[in-house]
Length: 470
Image 1 (cartoon, helix red, strand yellow):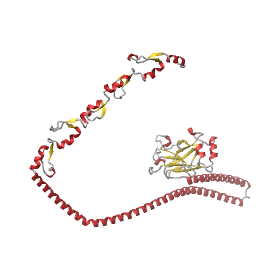
Image 2 (cartoon, rainbow, N blue to C red):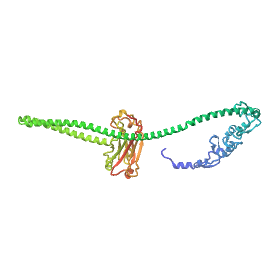
Image 3 (cartoon, rainbow, N blue to C red):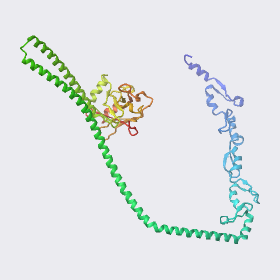
Image 4 (cartoon, rainbow, N blue to C red):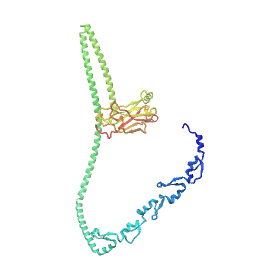
């Protein structure tokens, strides 16, 4: 159990033994190691019939005789049509489908035996076959044997001619009626043709007008979309400017009060030195407080400027084009574990749609760490999430843009897993990122034309074609 004794195994396999088929007549002796090869050719070894349906076993040397005479599933030929088939199917073939098998006429005529393939043609000529008179369509109701049909035709020849004459007269009257109807219709045909031509011309004109209207409608929709975007941006700017204007007015009013009090102090400043000192201290405190408020306003103005920059680059059609500058520096920061990942600006599927962003690991993440650029898609908490369907189900396409003339962009796409927490309604600012840890190899990225001027472009597209309106 600890190690194999190779020497002992070699000695055992070299022992001389009889063939396993010794009881059936094999007298061969050989080493134990030669037994498997011998059993593959031993004529006395029991093997199954090579025909799969046969379950019998026999010695290998008996297989030729078994296949020639004994096997029930051996190949045989039909003695009538010479078709080859398994022996077990020959009898059924003869009784059901063999075209050369002799069968008797079902009408028990003088033809006692004929091939099955000729039976259908014999039925037409059989003297004992039941047939109807060929003038049945003209009104003759006679039915009888083929043998009696000639006598019927010769006996009722005059009656058959009378039936045909009546039939012919009825057909001629119908033809006259049809001719009358056709002549009436031919009279109105020219007016109908001219009317049809007029309708076709009107239809062509309407189609052309419809095409022009569709073009105008598409142009108007584009203009309305661009105007809506501009109006939304202007509204956001106006809201922020109104808030800032109110705050600035408050500051101006406070400064005016301070100036008024300073003027009053300058006029009556000699009245009391103690009160003047106290008033100056309070004024200095107020000035310091106003300086602090102005600092806060400066910070808020800087924050508003940043928000305007984000709004200028935000898209509302489900497409993000992310420009990442200073690739080498940011890559070194990722290698040194200073800044492992970068987030893009938010983008949306519509003004009231999903809020999303992209996240990139320039030195890779997970399986791609140190070898690949990893790219992920992130669903963020938006203002209109309560009106949107969840989980998020839209197809997402991630792409690294080729800046060379060949435009061989590298991309990958996926359909969100509805059971993943990454695509449920966000409870925090953003969900767990989902995407491609092995998005693109760093060697491919840095040797192709994907980096120019130390800048790369990443494109994320969300399919909004089937997205319902909120």
